[in-house]
Image (cartoon, rainbow, N blue to C red; front, side):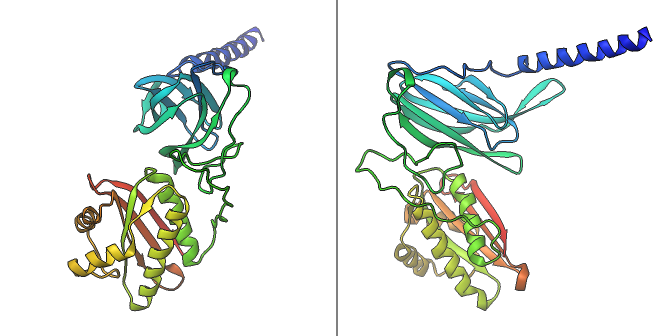
Length: 312
């Protein structure tokens, strides 16, 4: 009987030690949740409420936070320009493995800046500034309301996309998001969402072509190009190369929107158009098993910046 009690006591102590050691295994100590910015300081909030893995955070190449899934963490920083890096982390054998870092650059001036984390299929895609709110000294009274952004990740407060100093934009009504629509329009909406979260804000984008395998899909390819352009422009985060410019290059290079365009050709055409990102894609299959695929390439490096494959 005493031996059995001893085993139970040993198991309980093991659980207590495990619970105590896990927080100590963080890559960075937790930041004070109730800390507030003082004069000359700003707050950076890391929003991991939609994340399934631990995320490590670096500020100007120094690790400052280790954020658990479904939580947020606030970091107090001096006003000025900061470079934030985010990376997913997983513990194996007592060692933290760190994934690829994603960069977010921001300028703070007595602001509360919320950075949202996008993770798809268990992989960190990127981080985006969801909200910037001016705060008074001590961080108690917000002095500037944020604008609603139709494409921002969900956060508890209204969000906006930071814009260069200019006349204030009117509040825009978010477009309805279609998740399970089996039409071509639903497929384009889902593909656009993936690209919007994957591409750097401020990119100049050229939608080069959507290849098709059948004649009856050519009108559908034209629709995809026009709708993608509209959805990207509607976010007010990107510049889209005008179709007239693309038509001129198209005639000069003698290619069809419905034909295949390899990555090298797409990048070359993007450089002619002054684009930083080019998008190509295809429509394949027939009947109820058609699929839209799109791919975004960096014109300078030919690196794939974003991809989507949607059935309709």
